[in-house]
Structures are given as structure tokens and as C-alpha cells.
Length: 386
Image 1: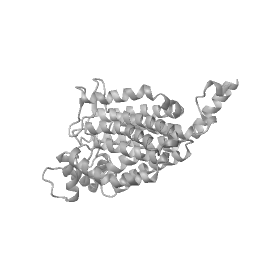
Image 2: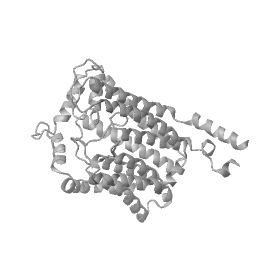
Image 3: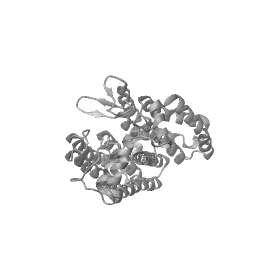
Image 4: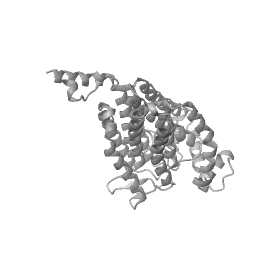
């Protein structure tokens, strides 16, 4: 009887403590994404969009929501301990992008997808989720020694593996996200300010190296045209100019999801979906979306403060880094204040793998938030129930 009562009490406590505000916010975003993609298809605004896009998005929403609840109900410590099972699988999937199964989407610079016949997935999205767990687990094991050079070097080496792999794919946007996750998680764990200052001092050298030896001509030109608008002879401004045209045509309240005179922007269903948001819902709708995305980030930051230990806090801040970096880079790209780098808007852009992985990331945040006290753990060890 004691075991049953304890288990029931734990589950009741979980449902009471779950961050419903965060879950509702991301569900509103992903629900809006389905409506946007369906409108893009119905109105035949872009030849890149077909009926499968919004259907896949709807299915991913449902699976993601269910997965989020399941992950949030499991103690994140238990998930992290089994890193040796899922980390090789994630790395193996990424490795497949370098085989005949790998391919790059039309108009993209990277080869970051694999076609398994019955489904197409982007392994780097799965790798983000795995990195969150493995890195938080690694940091939790060396928290007291974090600022010792050897342990910090090993942590940086850990982070360099996934970042380096996606950079070799040509997916520089995701590589930047991994770098942001690394900085936010290490800083949350107590990285010395002097290391951060030293890293900042090295940034000009790092930028020079990347500019000279990593970037191709197209990447360098995308940055140059931002500094000198109107001088683009290769058409690199074309997509961003169309995106701005779409946003301006939306006016204050937009043209709605049907019956308007819409602008066709390349990748409007994916990386440039914010352009369609501005065109369909106007300035008011675009600001509302920015406010909701900011609220999601702030909610994740709030939950990190409630986490009980270093692992929980770093998990939350890793997710915060993903959301913040994606939001900043995507919106900056569409508004032509940052170069086109090919990075989706979380919960809005088309992409089943991205939607699923982001919901699972939110599940990890909620797990860290709900399992901050032993009595609220849903799954107990046997000795805790006797």
C-alpha cells in the first residue's frame, strides 16, 4: 500500500508542478506553424511547398508533444546516465550524411540530411539533443575541477567533436549553435570569468582563421553585401530583399492567410517563414511572434533557476542557448541585419526532425524543473519506496 500511495502522490505532484505555461507557449508556436504551412500550400505561394509539409508538421507536433511529456516525467539524471547507448547512434546517423544516403536540400550549402527511404531526417538536430545530455553529464562530473586546465580542455574537446562534424558538413549555422551551447553551459557551471575574457580576446584571431581558411567565396560575399548593400553582382541579396518586401507588404495587420497578394520567397516555408508571418499578420503579428519566442526563452531561463543541481541548470541553459541563438540568427537573417546562414525559426519553420528535437529539449527543461525535489519524482528507485 505504501508503494502505491507514494507512486500516486509522486505522479500527482508531477502534474501539478509541470511548467504548463512553457508547454502552452511552444504548442501555440507549433500549431501556428501548421496553419502557416497549410496556407502556403493552399494559396500556392511557393512551388517548394506541398501537402506533405503541413501534414508532417502536424504529425511531428503530436509526436513531439507526447515525447515531451514522457521525457519530462523521467528524471534527467537517469536519461544522462545512458549516454553510451544513444550517443553512438546519433554520431552514426551524422556519419551517414557523408555516404550515399546523405544529401543536401536544393538551395542549401550543406549536406546535412539522410534519406532512409521511408523518411528523411536531419541528424544534426538529434545530435543537439544528445549533446545537451552528454555535456551536462560531463560537466556535472567535474564541476569542482571545471577551471582546471586539463578538465576544461577535455570539456572543450567534447564540444569540438559535434561542432566540428557539422562544420565539415557545411552547416555553419548549427556549428555556431553548438558553440553557443558550450559557452552558456560552461558559464552556468561556474567557468571563470578570466577564461571568458581570454576567449573574447581570441575572437578576432578565430574570425580571421575562419574567414581565410573555412569560409568559401559565397560565405564571405554574404557578409560583404550586408556592409555594402546594393553592390551584390551574384544575386546574394535577392532572397533577403524579397523577404523584406514580403514583410513590408503586410502593413500593420497583414493580408491574412488567404486571398492576399503574396510574395514568393525562396525557403519561405523554412528559414524565411518569418517573412510570411509578417506578410500574413503584419507588424502586429510579427511583434506578437517575437514576444512569444522571447517568452519561451525567458521561461526556460526561469526554469533553470529552479533546477536543483548543476546538471539540471546546465541542461536548461543549453536549451536556452539553442532557442536564443536560433531566434537571433533567423530573425536577423530575414531582417537583413545578419547574413543568410540557413537556420530555422524554432517551432515555426518546416521540419519534422527539428520539431521533434525541440519538443524533446523542452521535455528536458521540464524534467529539470519538476524533479528538483525528491518527493516529486515520478519514477522512484526501489529502495526509495520501501
